Length: 80
Image 1 (cartoon, one colour):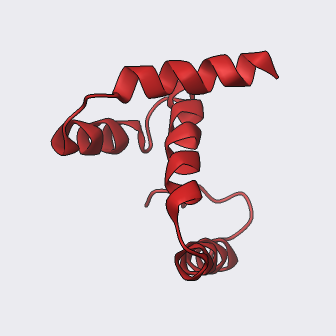
Image 2 (cartoon, helix red, strand yellow):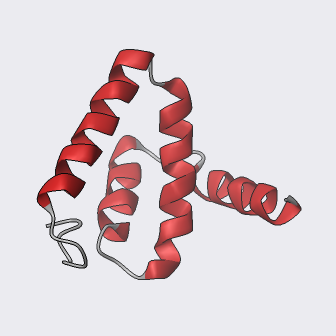
C-alpha cells in the first residue's frame, strides 16, 4: 500500500503549482500516450472524483458506460 501512496504523492508533487494550461497539456499529452502515463492519469482522476457531487459522478459513470457499451470488445476505441 505504501507504493500507491508514494505514487500518489509523486504525481501530486509533480503537478502542484502547474497553471490550468499546463495541467491541460499534461492531460492531453497523456491521453493515448505511453502506458506509463496511466497511473498518473489515475491519480488525477481520483482527485477529480473525490470533489464531484453525486450527480456529476452519475454523469461520468453514464458517459463511461455508454462509451463501453458502444465499443466492440477488444476494439481500440478508447480516446478516439
